[in-house]
Length: 385
Image 1 (cartoon, rainbow, N blue to C red):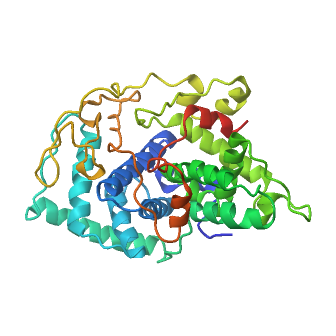
Image 2 (cartoon, rainbow, N blue to C red):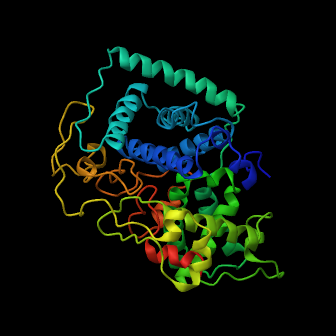
């Protein structure tokens, strides 16, 4: 078992909770850091692997440190800076700080013009110095353990190699494509909470494959020797732990008010009667019924906004790097009184995958789900059927 997987009671007694931070606020700060990282990765056209590594480092850090002591946005940028080194991707510190400053301002103060960050200013040098100090603290906190295996790698390996080899999955390329495509988006979305330090990555992969196969009506058969299909993939996996993950992921999806792309509907919560008991154990906002979406209609034209490079966005600027954010400039406060999180950069197309998982990208007949995109209302309903 990985040394970075902890019991629920350990995470419920985290340093942040000991400092008086409420569970809802703790998870809200995790999710806002996830949104910041996702926006920076989209703006800089970084691979999904970078975002996953960043959030893994982020969640590992806060197992031992408190949000009261370290700002979630600054640590998110620090983790991204270290993740780029781990994955051997070249990116200047200046780019990370500029985009991080720009996006953070738009997340915390929607509707206002983000100021331009001068690289010769005292503010920039202080940010750069804090970033390097936090990087050293991050390495010390994690014990310089930079070994990370993501659920996405397991998903591709299990669906395309392990399960077909043991005849647990029908020998159909279309089924494999559909399962990979569906679980890919879920795997990215799961990094918005601390699942990566709560469950093994191969267990997360098996649970998502199980849910995707059930939704797509694909039969997962036992092996020829009678062992269940998931035993071929993850020896420590069982039905109980997969169901436990799906329950927690289900609650996370319902309690997260992430803005959607115009063609994706997200209803909170799922109103199927069979989920009444499961919803009772979710967050108070999800159990009582979520408030109407505070975000303006998707058809509203975005207002021009300044970019870190000094140029201005226009309604026609829809490239991922042009920081269009669609509704970000006009988004009002959310239902919990906190600033609403602006929508993801327009375009919705995931960056290219790394060589290790590029085959999974080429398998998809359409564009993979947007980076970190949460399941639709129908997908959430199917998780626990």
